Every structure is written in structure tokens, then in C-alpha cells.
Image (cartoon, rainbow, N blue to C red; front, side):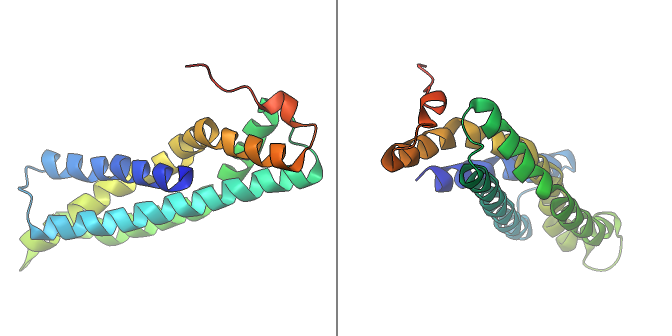
Length: 169
């Protein structure tokens, strides 16, 4: 349940960027902007799921190599997993922004509808990648550490002694 909760929380942060841009442009929420928010939610959840997969793989590789015995090892694994996602995430966001930004500045026939559709996507493509790269690994560390500790307790390995320090708050 931790990973779906992380993804659902990330959707809210990504949608905030879309809502901010709608507000800054002075647009009213319409069916077109709702469609843009739905598309943004899909992209944001994809960003989050793929980021969590990369973080899991980086931590799993460290566990298999026997290099997962402290909080510093988890930090290094999270950085390693997030760094692998920087280029694909930046390329995806850049292509989406390049495709939708002209819709924000166009003045042709039907531009009102297209602008309302593009605004949430452009705003969200500013906040969603930042969220995916910086916030998700931090939340993953806070919520995911307990999961790895429980798995290691089941496997009876000695490296749990340094990792199992739950936050008392």
C-alpha cells in the first residue's frame, strides 16, 4: 500500500502546477481544462511509477551486492536510481512542452479550446518532473525504509541492525 499511496500523493503535486497555470492565465475551468488535467494525471502517475521502479531496482542491486547496511547506503541507492531517470524524464517533459507551448500562444481558429487543454499540461510539466526527481525519492526514503527492513527481517540477515531505526515521531 505504500507505493500506491506515494503515487496518489504525487498526483496532487503535479495537478497543482496545472491548476496554477490555469489561474495565472485567468482561465475558467472548463471541460477542455478538465481533459488536460486528466492527461496530466496520467503522465504524472507514469512518472511516479517508473521512478519507483528505478528506485526499487537500485536498492535491490545494492542489497544483492551486500552494500545496503546503513542510511547512507540507502541515500546513495536513491540518488543512483533517481539519476538514471533524469535524462528520460527531461526528454519527455521537453517534448511535451515543445508540442504544447505553441497552443498557449496561438491565435487561430479554435485557439480558446486548445489553450484551455494545453494550459494544465504545460503547468504540470513544470512541476511533475521536479516532483518526480526530488520529492518522490525523499518520500520513498521516509515510507519505503520500513518495507526493506521488514523484508530483511524475514530473511534473517544481519544488515538490519543499522537500518531499523524508525522515526519516533
